[in-house]
Image (cartoon, rainbow, N blue to C red; front, side):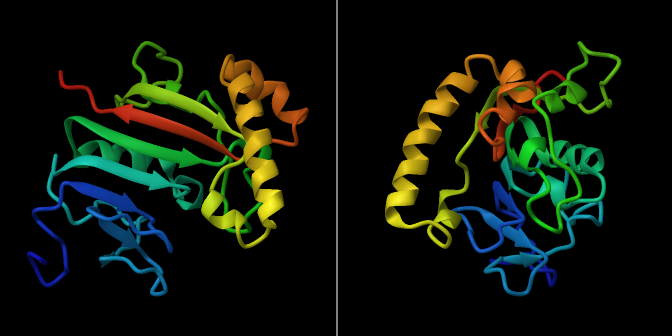
Length: 199
């Protein structure tokens, strides 16, 4: 139930930003596109968002950051919206496949989390997130593959992806810099962050 004329749900605890055609049950689904089945239309480049500080337990942003003008401003805003201990689930295109969509403004590397870790002062942006998990994915976004691959092709991509991912994630920094060019690029980096409790 909306809490105001803007349609913002004051009781929502989980936020799905840039939901596109894939809203998540139990989340407040947000997108700018009128074609998206979103609960709220919002330009995610316009910061601040119309939510109070520390409202959300979890924020999901799948393949959104590469479309935004300022990813560091977005990460600061998402930090503001998360309660201490809250989770931020981010999926972004790896730089080796980062510009396969005409609206992508950038690709990402596995070094992206260093910008949110105060142990690395040359890169730290002042927004502190703890990295809980990082994974490279060779075959990502299976919901889109059904439009471009046959059932056999999807099965083969899943099998190859499982093998490539298992090997790549033994040493993601090496795979990101070297092995990505041997396998035709990684489609995605999956990052799971936590907002620190002690702030």
